[in-house]
Structure formats: C-alpha cells, structure tokens
Amino acid sequence: MTSSSPSPRPGIRLPSPAEPPEPMGPLAQFGMALGLIVLEVALTAAALLVWFFAALHLDTGTPAPEVSPAPYLLAVVAIGVGAGAAAVTWGGRRAWGVAVTQGLMAALLTCGALAGLAYEARDAAPEQPTPAPGVVGCRSGDHSQECAHLGG
Image (cartoon, rainbow, N blue to C red):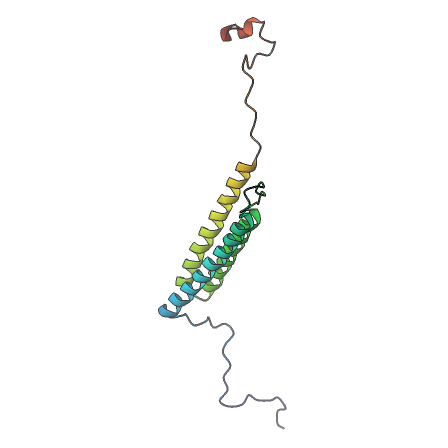
C-alpha cells in the first residue's frame, strides 16, 4: 500500500528556522549607520526648530509667552530610545558597526535631552528664601547662655 502523505517537490529547499541571518558587509553597514545617523539628526533638528519657532516672539510691545522645552526634549528622548532599539535590532543581526553607532547616538541623544530636562526643572524651581539675619540655632531664644558665644 502507498503512503498518502504528500512529499515535498524536488528542488525546493526551505531554510532552517534556526539559521542566523547573514551578516552585512562593511560598506553596507557604513551606509546603514550613516543613513540612520542622518535621520536621527534631522528628527532632532526638526524637534528643536519647532521649539525655537514656538518660543519666537517678534512683538516687542507685549511680553513673550513662556514656552516649556519639556515636550520638545521628550521628543528628543524618544528619538534616542528609537536609536537604542535600532542598536539592539542591528546587534541581533550581527551588524556590529550599525549597532555601536546607534548605541552611541542613543546615549548622546537620551543623556543630552535628560540633562536639559534636569536643568529646566532646576531652573524653574522656586528659589528658597534666604534666612533672616540674627541668631540661628538657639533653642531657647537669644537671651540664654546657650547663644552667648554668638553675641546674644
């Protein structure tokens, strides 16, 4: 009796699912890395230009509105996170040149934007009032012997 299972056609060979992808050549890695860097710089420049034009105030007769840089810097952080994801993806494909350059771009964009956000938060925080002049640190007032060394 003959088997009823279908046999694969001769000449067709399917790749093994466990085969790692073929590595990119050095010229292809250079082109891919350069293209991604140009894309990330263009996106970052676009975000910063939108921030610049949002804060641009040409009318000198009215006060300029306050424009927070936070949303624009968070957009730069998102671009950096995307570069980090690209680094992981290209590292998995064994394109180490692209992975390293994308990792550097991710660190540069993310750390730079987070430093800008930290500076903005510190700059926007209300200033603490300076302490009043006089005796500071005397528990019972300035009439006791505890503060005699301070002139009280």
